[in-house]
Length: 114
Image 1 (tube, helix red, strand yellow):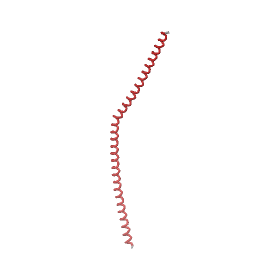
Image 2 (cartoon, rainbow, N blue to C red):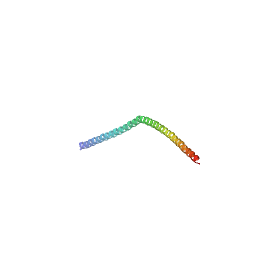
Image 3 (cartoon, helix red, strand yellow):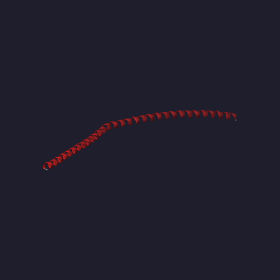
Image 4 (cartoon, helix red, strand yellow):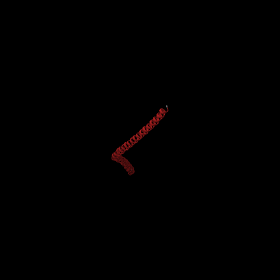
């Protein structure tokens, strides 16, 4: 009877030890996964920090180039407008001069006819 009680006690201790080792293993797996997640988050943050500076510089450079291109386009458009204004002015002055010549000729003809 004593041997049976001791056997039951030993089985209990073995099961308890087995349960403890399983629990320890589960805890190690959870800790490993948490550490891996933290490491991935850290590396991602570092990558963003290092690439973020380059991305910012690229954005600044693209903005500067776009502003330069827009300024050049505005200058070309202003020059075209000026050329068009000069051309319209010449046409207008030529039309007025031709009209004056016609009106002057008509007045002479009318004055001679009177």
